[in-house]
Length: 482
Ligand code: AMP
Image (cartoon, rainbow, N blue to C red; front, side, top):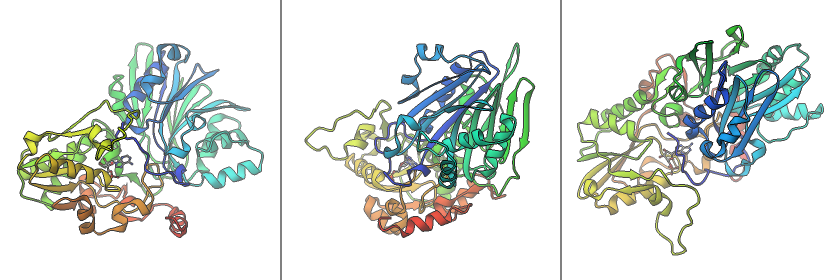
């Protein structure tokens, strides 16, 4: 699960707009819509920690509040009391440094001839630049650099009569990854791109006055508010929640499925159901398969918390090596710590993780983590485990080597910074300083997520992108500093 306390974004890259990580939530038909959205966003905080926002509506007016920071700090009782109405949408956003301005915080909201509309988005619209250039050439004025605003301008310019028709038309010209939630007049409308890159789940609450409908990036947001998981918004589908209940339709034909496998590897919470399956189960299976594929004789299996825990449990079960919490995480680390002027080695990692000497001393340790991106964190952790007395350190990664950046909504560094894109496994092992290093194979990862019918995107492990984006990759590769 993403680390809410990480201190630095991976990169300040001109292609930042491909790197937003976000969580979205929406509710229709509940008298406390904004309060529920606040709780939903709280459960989705791990998907984005830079800014958060809520728009609520009674069907006529839209109130929005958004700010930089964490959900718990932004939405005070006073703020929530001003967000009225029976429908609301919410957003948590993480983006890399250059792009981190309040202007880009969501939801975005506009009034147009067809009524007032607000939107929140998870994913990356890969033709946003072209669409934006076209819209600007025809007089649209943009306030933010985020790709999401494009959707509102498309709706505003549409000649369709109703908001739903204008939305349908706008969705048809978008490319790339989008799970979108809208407040559109007196309805909540949600949609998912035809490849289904990012998740979007539907839930239902049974109230005395009738059902309320909720939508969220992950089902952990439903648990907190006692909503029942109904299923997924299907790729290419638009779902409308209104006085008539739930209406489902396809705004376009679904394309080849490309569900992000990294949601299961790292990004989503293990207590969520994502793309219809349990994240904890798939992560544990990754660990089991890793133990079978890359065994090692050792005394103890130690997870790198929190994201390595489920895979480490699987590894321990399958290998029979005892599972122990040999690294303890401090969950209260903020970004405000000032490093003492006298340099402390590996300060950032040590603030967050501390070894349990009694578990590690004299032991041969299997360290399990979900992923290895630049390799710098693992290097520090291995050093820490050795200095706590471990005799041997064997690093096991529960996914394949990450060799290509994501353009569909996960913040991965440029190819230049991805260690596995540039070095062999033996070179990485030497850099990290462990005794052995091994990854889960692509084939076993696919088995762990039950991908017999090829529904997942593995572009970060294969470099093969499921959309035309390969052109942008070529463009990036040709840039001198990549
Ligand atoms: P590093 O290899 O030093 O870049 O760090 C790898 C660690 O970062 C792993 O333990 C992951 O849990 C975590 N990680 C992987 N992907 C991401 C991401 N997109 N954003 C933040 N952290 C990540």
